[in-house]
Length: 106
Image (cartoon, rainbow, N blue to C red):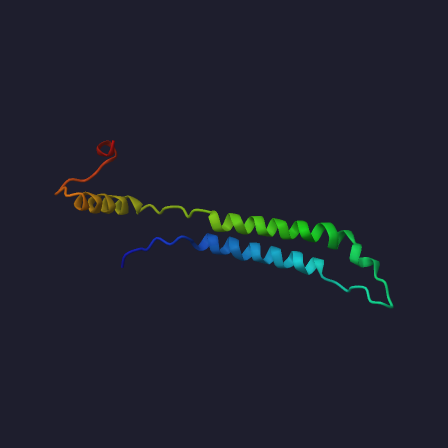
């Protein structure tokens, strides 16, 4: 069976899951009881809810962006794939049994 090249690998998905958990943690830190008409709760202006929680969410969103744009590393067998791709390109260009190397591309 031929190995498919996906945009994301296992590490990308793990990083996205961790990033999502960080964002959820930030929203949990922002939540809490609010003030009512009869009872004023000064805790709505606490440092945790106003400064720390938004920074935690921001870090989670930035790490999510990194997880999405991170390029998976090629495996050791990728040289065979490149050789096959070169042969396909050569066949498409009308070359018969010639392989395209880096020197021939110039």
